[in-house]
Length: 134
Image (cartoon, rainbow, N blue to C red):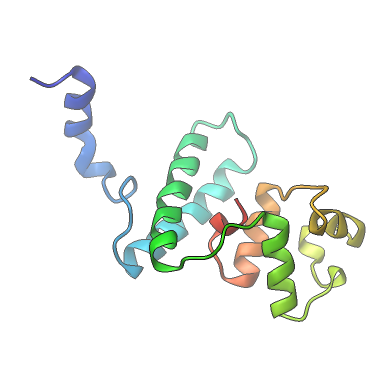
């Protein structure tokens, strides 16, 4: 016998399965990245937005795929940003989309954290999942 919650989930699973399942292929992974990008545009940094939980869930599912297929040592967002900047030969002056030089330097030393808009800009610029900055 199913609980009401499980019965409701079963009834709606087919319509949300593509969004709430761990991706198992590059195509599914890319589809989820696109959806995550769209959600970031809609939700922004509003943690009370009705879709904020979906944003968090989708990020977690993407992270599971990335850990299996693109393993990287865990690093704080500022270290990831520093690494990407070094790899691309960039300085704090080269990232005006995430703030002025002083703000960027504070992010790079870990005094400021990246916000959702900055994460979106960086993930697009460096062609990485926003999850690498979370």
